[in-house]
Length: 269
Image (cartoon, rainbow, N blue to C red; front, side, top):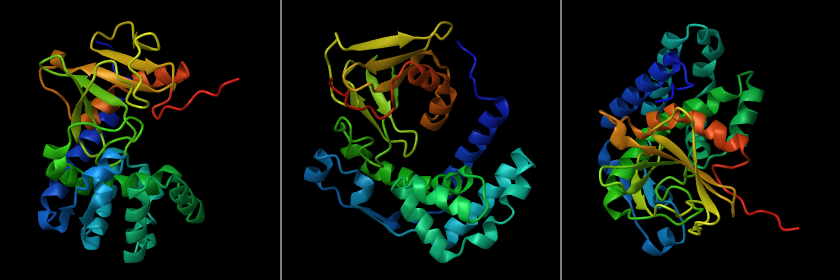
Protein backbone atom coordinates (compact mmCIF):
# COMPACT_ATOMS: atom_id res chain seq x y z
CA UNK A 1 0.00 0.00 0.00
CA UNK A 2 1.33 3.48 -0.85
CA UNK A 3 2.56 5.53 2.07
CA UNK A 4 0.36 8.51 2.90
CA UNK A 5 1.75 11.89 1.87
CA UNK A 6 0.26 13.31 5.08
CA UNK A 7 2.73 13.46 7.98
CA UNK A 8 2.18 11.20 10.98
CA UNK A 9 1.96 14.32 13.16
CA UNK A 10 -0.90 15.72 11.10
CA UNK A 11 -2.65 12.35 11.02
CA UNK A 12 -2.38 12.19 14.81
CA UNK A 13 -3.80 15.71 15.07
CA UNK A 14 -6.76 14.79 12.90
CA UNK A 15 -7.41 11.68 14.98
CA UNK A 16 -7.46 13.91 18.07
CA UNK A 17 -9.90 16.27 16.38
CA UNK A 18 -12.18 13.38 15.37
CA UNK A 19 -12.18 12.23 19.01
CA UNK A 20 -12.99 15.78 20.14
CA UNK A 21 -15.90 15.96 17.71
CA UNK A 22 -17.27 12.69 19.07
CA UNK A 23 -17.11 14.12 22.59
CA UNK A 24 -18.76 17.34 21.46
CA UNK A 25 -21.53 15.43 19.74
CA UNK A 26 -22.41 13.78 23.06
CA UNK A 27 -22.91 17.25 24.57
CA UNK A 28 -25.58 18.24 22.05
CA UNK A 29 -29.21 17.82 23.05
CA UNK A 30 -30.63 15.71 20.17
CA UNK A 31 -33.94 17.53 20.53
CA UNK A 32 -32.28 20.73 19.31
CA UNK A 33 -31.94 19.16 15.85
CA UNK A 34 -35.29 18.77 14.11
CA UNK A 35 -35.20 17.54 10.50
CA UNK A 36 -38.08 18.44 8.23
CA UNK A 37 -37.43 16.29 5.22
CA UNK A 38 -39.13 17.64 2.12
CA UNK A 39 -38.76 14.85 -0.44
CA UNK A 40 -39.41 17.15 -3.39
CA UNK A 41 -36.77 19.63 -2.23
CA UNK A 42 -34.24 16.86 -1.56
CA UNK A 43 -34.91 15.30 -4.94
CA UNK A 44 -34.11 18.71 -6.43
CA UNK A 45 -30.79 18.73 -4.58
CA UNK A 46 -31.54 20.77 -1.45
CA UNK A 47 -29.35 19.40 1.40
CA UNK A 48 -31.26 17.93 4.34
CA UNK A 49 -29.36 20.18 6.77
CA UNK A 50 -30.85 23.22 5.02
CA UNK A 51 -34.29 21.78 5.77
CA UNK A 52 -33.45 21.11 9.41
CA UNK A 53 -34.11 23.39 12.36
CA UNK A 54 -30.87 23.43 14.37
CA UNK A 55 -30.63 25.36 17.63
CA UNK A 56 -26.91 25.93 18.04
CA UNK A 57 -25.72 26.33 21.63
CA UNK A 58 -23.44 29.38 21.35
CA UNK A 59 -21.83 28.78 24.74
CA UNK A 60 -20.84 25.29 23.60
CA UNK A 61 -19.53 26.69 20.32
CA UNK A 62 -17.26 29.12 22.18
CA UNK A 63 -16.14 26.38 24.58
CA UNK A 64 -15.30 24.06 21.69
CA UNK A 65 -13.26 26.77 19.99
CA UNK A 66 -11.12 26.97 23.14
CA UNK A 67 -10.78 23.18 23.31
CA UNK A 68 -9.81 23.04 19.64
CA UNK A 69 -7.25 25.79 20.16
CA UNK A 70 -5.69 23.81 23.01
CA UNK A 71 -5.53 20.69 20.83
CA UNK A 72 -3.87 22.58 17.98
CA UNK A 73 -1.30 24.17 20.29
CA UNK A 74 -0.53 20.84 21.97
CA UNK A 75 0.15 19.38 18.52
CA UNK A 76 2.22 22.38 17.42
CA UNK A 77 3.31 24.86 20.12
CA UNK A 78 4.26 27.39 17.42
CA UNK A 79 0.55 27.96 16.83
CA UNK A 80 0.07 29.50 20.28
CA UNK A 81 1.13 32.95 19.11
CA UNK A 82 -0.95 32.69 15.91
CA UNK A 83 -4.08 31.73 17.86
CA UNK A 84 -3.55 34.08 20.79
CA UNK A 85 -6.11 36.70 19.74
CA UNK A 86 -8.95 34.31 18.82
CA UNK A 87 -10.57 34.39 22.26
CA UNK A 88 -10.84 38.18 22.21
CA UNK A 89 -12.15 38.30 18.64
CA UNK A 90 -15.11 35.95 19.04
CA UNK A 91 -18.17 37.03 20.99
CA UNK A 92 -21.68 35.61 20.67
CA UNK A 93 -22.53 37.71 17.59
CA UNK A 94 -19.34 36.66 15.80
CA UNK A 95 -19.96 33.04 16.80
CA UNK A 96 -23.42 33.15 15.22
CA UNK A 97 -21.95 34.67 12.06
CA UNK A 98 -19.22 32.03 11.92
CA UNK A 99 -21.82 29.27 12.18
CA UNK A 100 -23.91 30.77 9.38
CA UNK A 101 -20.94 31.31 7.04
CA UNK A 102 -19.33 27.92 7.72
CA UNK A 103 -22.69 26.25 7.18
CA UNK A 104 -22.91 27.84 3.71
CA UNK A 105 -19.25 27.35 2.68
CA UNK A 106 -18.63 31.12 2.53
CA UNK A 107 -14.86 31.02 2.13
CA UNK A 108 -14.64 34.68 1.15
CA UNK A 109 -16.15 35.80 4.46
CA UNK A 110 -13.48 33.94 6.42
CA UNK A 111 -10.69 35.25 4.18
CA UNK A 112 -11.94 38.79 4.89
CA UNK A 113 -12.20 38.09 8.63
CA UNK A 114 -8.64 36.80 8.69
CA UNK A 115 -7.32 39.82 6.79
CA UNK A 116 -9.20 42.28 9.01
CA UNK A 117 -7.92 40.72 12.21
CA UNK A 118 -4.34 39.87 11.31
CA UNK A 119 -4.84 36.11 11.26
CA UNK A 120 -3.45 33.53 8.88
CA UNK A 121 -6.04 32.85 6.19
CA UNK A 122 -6.77 29.24 7.17
CA UNK A 123 -7.48 29.85 10.85
CA UNK A 124 -11.07 31.26 11.06
CA UNK A 125 -12.68 28.86 8.60
CA UNK A 126 -10.81 25.85 9.99
CA UNK A 127 -11.99 26.62 13.51
CA UNK A 128 -15.59 27.33 12.50
CA UNK A 129 -15.87 24.34 10.18
CA UNK A 130 -14.39 21.95 12.73
CA UNK A 131 -16.78 22.94 15.51
CA UNK A 132 -20.00 22.88 13.44
CA UNK A 133 -19.38 19.35 12.20
CA UNK A 134 -20.82 17.58 15.27
CA UNK A 135 -24.16 19.28 14.53
CA UNK A 136 -23.98 18.21 10.88
CA UNK A 137 -23.00 14.69 11.88
CA UNK A 138 -25.87 14.40 14.34
CA UNK A 139 -28.22 15.68 11.64
CA UNK A 140 -26.84 13.02 9.29
CA UNK A 141 -27.41 10.30 11.89
CA UNK A 142 -31.05 11.35 12.23
CA UNK A 143 -31.77 11.37 8.50
CA UNK A 144 -29.50 8.51 7.37
CA UNK A 145 -32.43 6.03 7.05
CA UNK A 146 -34.00 8.38 4.48
CA UNK A 147 -30.84 8.80 2.37
CA UNK A 148 -30.78 6.31 -0.48
CA UNK A 149 -29.08 8.39 -3.15
CA UNK A 150 -28.00 11.84 -4.25
CA UNK A 151 -28.65 14.12 -7.20
CA UNK A 152 -25.47 14.17 -9.32
CA UNK A 153 -23.80 17.57 -9.04
CA UNK A 154 -25.67 18.62 -5.89
CA UNK A 155 -23.06 17.30 -3.48
CA UNK A 156 -23.82 15.52 -0.22
CA UNK A 157 -27.59 15.14 0.24
CA UNK A 158 -27.25 16.13 3.90
CA UNK A 159 -24.66 18.94 4.11
CA UNK A 160 -23.91 19.89 0.49
CA UNK A 161 -20.20 19.02 0.61
CA UNK A 162 -18.87 18.23 -2.90
CA UNK A 163 -18.62 14.47 -3.46
CA UNK A 164 -15.04 13.20 -3.59
CA UNK A 165 -14.86 9.91 -1.67
CA UNK A 166 -16.36 6.47 -2.21
CA UNK A 167 -15.58 3.03 -0.86
CA UNK A 168 -15.93 -0.50 -2.13
CA UNK A 169 -17.44 -2.35 0.80
CA UNK A 170 -18.01 -5.97 1.81
CA UNK A 171 -20.36 -6.82 -1.02
CA UNK A 172 -18.23 -4.99 -3.59
CA UNK A 173 -20.82 -2.24 -3.90
CA UNK A 174 -19.76 1.38 -4.32
CA UNK A 175 -20.79 3.51 -1.36
CA UNK A 176 -20.19 7.26 -1.31
CA UNK A 177 -19.14 8.72 2.04
CA UNK A 178 -19.21 12.36 3.10
CA UNK A 179 -16.13 13.24 5.19
CA UNK A 180 -17.92 16.31 6.55
CA UNK A 181 -21.16 14.93 8.01
CA UNK A 182 -20.37 11.19 7.67
CA UNK A 183 -23.57 10.26 5.84
CA UNK A 184 -23.27 7.57 3.16
CA UNK A 185 -25.28 6.21 0.26
CA UNK A 186 -24.97 3.56 -2.45
CA UNK A 187 -24.12 4.60 -5.99
CA UNK A 188 -23.74 2.96 -9.39
CA UNK A 189 -20.19 1.86 -10.08
CA UNK A 190 -19.82 3.83 -13.33
CA UNK A 191 -22.00 6.84 -12.51
CA UNK A 192 -20.18 10.17 -12.26
CA UNK A 193 -21.19 11.78 -8.96
CA UNK A 194 -20.92 15.22 -10.54
CA UNK A 195 -22.91 14.93 -13.76
CA UNK A 196 -24.53 11.49 -13.74
CA UNK A 197 -22.62 10.27 -16.81
CA UNK A 198 -22.54 6.44 -17.02
CA UNK A 199 -20.98 6.07 -20.47
CA UNK A 200 -17.95 3.75 -20.19
CA UNK A 201 -16.43 5.52 -23.19
CA UNK A 202 -16.19 8.82 -21.28
CA UNK A 203 -15.45 7.53 -17.78
CA UNK A 204 -12.35 5.69 -16.66
CA UNK A 205 -10.46 4.55 -13.59
CA UNK A 206 -6.98 5.85 -12.91
CA UNK A 207 -4.73 3.70 -10.76
CA UNK A 208 -1.66 4.73 -8.79
CA UNK A 209 1.50 2.65 -8.92
CA UNK A 210 2.18 1.17 -5.50
CA UNK A 211 -1.36 1.81 -4.26
CA UNK A 212 -3.31 -1.44 -4.36
CA UNK A 213 -6.47 -0.26 -2.61
CA UNK A 214 -7.27 3.00 -4.37
CA UNK A 215 -8.35 4.31 -7.75
CA UNK A 216 -9.72 7.53 -9.15
CA UNK A 217 -12.96 7.53 -11.12
CA UNK A 218 -12.77 10.35 -13.68
CA UNK A 219 -15.32 11.72 -16.12
CA UNK A 220 -14.41 13.29 -19.44
CA UNK A 221 -17.79 15.01 -19.77
CA UNK A 222 -17.48 17.23 -16.71
CA UNK A 223 -13.84 16.80 -15.68
CA UNK A 224 -15.00 15.57 -12.29
CA UNK A 225 -13.36 12.89 -10.18
CA UNK A 226 -14.15 10.68 -7.19
CA UNK A 227 -11.65 8.78 -5.09
CA UNK A 228 -12.58 5.11 -4.60
CA UNK A 229 -10.99 3.14 -1.77
CA UNK A 230 -11.35 -0.63 -1.44
CA UNK A 231 -11.98 -0.74 2.30
CA UNK A 232 -12.25 -4.54 2.16
CA UNK A 233 -8.45 -4.44 2.33
CA UNK A 234 -8.51 -2.76 5.76
CA UNK A 235 -8.48 -4.74 9.00
CA UNK A 236 -10.01 -1.73 10.75
CA UNK A 237 -11.76 0.79 8.50
CA UNK A 238 -10.92 4.43 9.27
CA UNK A 239 -13.63 7.07 9.57
CA UNK A 240 -14.58 8.82 6.34
CA UNK A 241 -12.74 11.95 7.50
CA UNK A 242 -9.48 10.06 8.04
CA UNK A 243 -9.96 7.99 4.88
CA UNK A 244 -10.31 11.23 2.95
CA UNK A 245 -7.21 12.71 4.58
CA UNK A 246 -5.04 9.64 4.06
CA UNK A 247 -5.98 9.44 0.37
CA UNK A 248 -5.09 13.07 -0.38
CA UNK A 249 -2.42 11.83 -2.80
CA UNK A 250 -5.29 10.82 -5.09
CA UNK A 251 -6.61 14.40 -5.05
CA UNK A 252 -3.17 15.64 -6.11
CA UNK A 253 -2.98 13.14 -8.97
CA UNK A 254 -6.52 13.89 -10.18
CA UNK A 255 -6.06 17.65 -10.06
CA UNK A 256 -2.64 17.49 -11.75
CA UNK A 257 -4.40 15.68 -14.59
CA UNK A 258 -7.01 18.42 -14.94
CA UNK A 259 -9.91 16.92 -12.99
CA UNK A 260 -11.95 18.71 -10.32
CA UNK A 261 -13.70 17.57 -7.14
CA UNK A 262 -16.75 19.57 -8.14
CA UNK A 263 -16.86 18.84 -11.86
CA UNK A 264 -17.62 21.39 -14.54
CA UNK A 265 -19.10 21.46 -17.98
CA UNK A 266 -16.46 21.60 -20.70
CA UNK A 267 -16.56 24.64 -22.93
CA UNK A 268 -17.41 23.85 -26.52
CA UNK A 269 -15.42 25.50 -29.30
